[in-house]
Amino acid sequence: MPEITRAVEECLEQVLRLQDSSGAARTKMLARRLGVSLGTVTNSLRRLEGLGYIRRQRYKGARLTKRGHKIALNVLRRHRLTERLLTDVLHISWSRAHDAACKLEHCIDEEVTDSIDTALAHPTTCPHGNPIPRPGMAVSDASTRLVELSAHDAGIVIRVVDEEEEGALPYLESIGLIPGAAFTVEGHVPFDGAVILTLRESEFTVSKRAASLVVVQKRGLVKGDA
Image: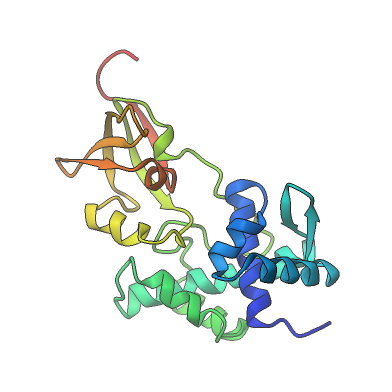
């Protein structure tokens, strides 16, 4: 089996993230996530398909094979445990941990990863609330998003998906829309669907895109009848 390089790991990890959030990894989105050209991504996907790590469908994008999924899940586990180490032990800010972990995840092996897991008492989620993969575990980001709630719905933030979205983590941290935060939806902006909510006794308007990244647990109606 050929050596699994950092470039291969990064590509497979992003395919997994996009597959879980959108059903498949489209070339254009993958190029944006990896910061490379469309041609480079196309060549990479062709090579990964030849190695048996992905399958491509025209007009639908790429999906991981069983072999590719195993590799991507291991990378995701290293990433999320590293985020925990950075925030819980080194006190790196919630919004900076993701970028730092993206660099460090390729520098540690399975033995070091297991040691981090043990030292941290086997955390179940990363600082952004996303599950840390375990053997045989399926990871999916499909669940209720903040943008889907209606006026007068109340909820609690469970996790933030797609941490790669530029500027999302610092913004959400700045307003306190992080895992565990309770909020009430006041309504939506008619023009662009932005969500108006009350959080920590203050009112914020969260863009439709940002609200689509926030997974929540709905707590039901807090006023009104519908």
